[in-house]
Amino acid sequence: MRMRKKKHGAERINACSEFLIQNTTINTDNVNEIYGCDTARPLWLEIGCGKGAFVSKLAERNPEVNLIALERIADVAMLAMERCKAAELPNVRFIIGDMAKLWDIFEDHTVDRIYLNFSDPWPKAGHAKRRLTHRNFLAEYRRILKPGGAIFFKTDNRDLFDFSVEEFRDCGFRLENLTYDLHGSEWAKDNIMTEYEKNFSEKGFSINRVEAFTE
Ligand SMILES: C[S@@+](CC[C@H](N)C(=O)[O-])C[C@H]1O[C@@H](n2cnc3c(N)ncnc32)[C@H](O)[C@@H]1O
Image 1 (cartoon, rainbow, N blue to C red):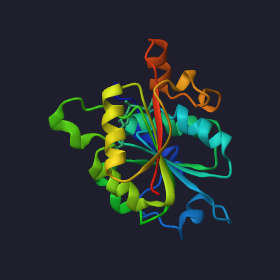
Image 2: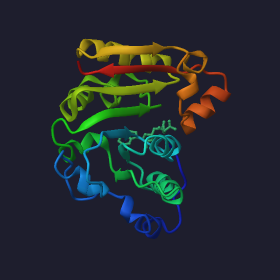
Image 3: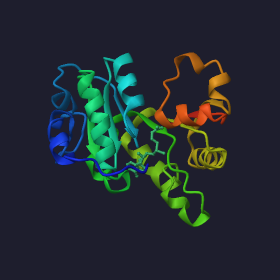
């Protein structure tokens, strides 16, 4: 995502600091503390949340779920945090950084769901390892997901989708609810549109979607 550098970025991020997770690992013992809740709740993670249209709506619809949104571009994460702050969502937290460098933050089997929405396609074959559905990433997702946990993946990019489905299958994930036309499918009514999804579907692209379960 390209974006002109925002003015007063550090101050604006600081003003949302209650939404930021920093300098801590995430495990099943401390997760309630992070969200200030006393009962165990599911933990869902969105990787590459962009400006936060999806995660904010998901949090609003699922107040009994704790959400972490991860975004590597600070100015983009800032807009997502400001959106969640304005909506007074108590169940979302953010991590600013690159997922590829953040594995240590998540202890084994802490996450129930991972959402990957319109991940960068990295079309060149030589860049395949950077795709967020490359098998190297899938191995780490499997480690941090709880047994029976799932990855929810959608993209307009058919090449990335086909690559990802093959990676999921080769890595032993069980696939469910696969569609090449999400908006024309039975799942359309519950679908939460992301910023990219709105943009691409308005241009006539159909949206591919699949759920990949660890077992
Ligand atoms: C194509 S945009 C999609 C944004 C949003 N998910 C949507 O559907 O509107 C991909 C986003 O993922 C972020 N991103 C890509 N790779 C990432 C990584 N390894 N770790 C964290 N964020 C990443 C990018 O900075 C960008 O904001």
